[in-house]
Length: 194
Image (cartoon, rainbow, N blue to C red):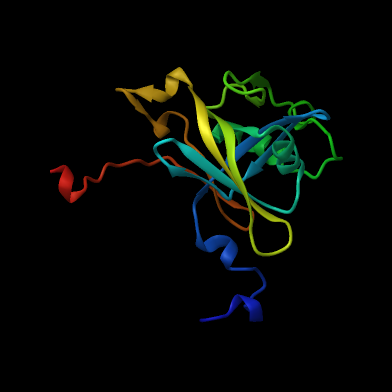
C-alpha cells in the first residue's frame, strides 16, 4: 500500500499514528499564574547530549504550551508501568486552569533548578529551561525544545552505576490508544566498542 497523506489513506484509522513506535511519554509539568498543570505527550524524546536537551510536540495550543510561553520552564517526568492509570487520567480535557495533579490524585514535588512542579516518585524527572518553541506546519502544532538544567533519578532505578529500565518498566505509546510496557533490555555493542 502507498498513500500520500494529503490524499488520505482510506483506512478506518490513520496508520501514521502507529508507524513511529514505541514513543516514550513525557509527563509534562508546568506552572503559571493560573496554577499548575500536568499532561502526557507521546511526541517526546531526547534530542542532544551536550548540553542535554529534550523536546515535545503539542498538537493544538494547550495549557502546557501556554504556561511554558509564560514562564519559559517545564518538567518532564518519566512514566513507569505503575503510573499508567494516573498518566491516562491526566490526558482528559479538563477546564482551562485545572490542576491535573490535584484533580487526578497525582502527588507533586517541586523542582530544584526551576519554579515548576513534577510528578513525585517518578523514576526520573528532567527540569527544563526552554530553548525554543517552533511553529510546525498545520494548525496549532508546536515543538518545544528544552535544555535540561536538573535531573532527578529515583535511587531504586540505579543499578551497577546505570539507570536501569528493568527496575521501573517505562510506558511507551504504540499509536492509536495502544501502549506497551518495556520489560526486556539487552546490550548490543557497536563495532567500535570491541
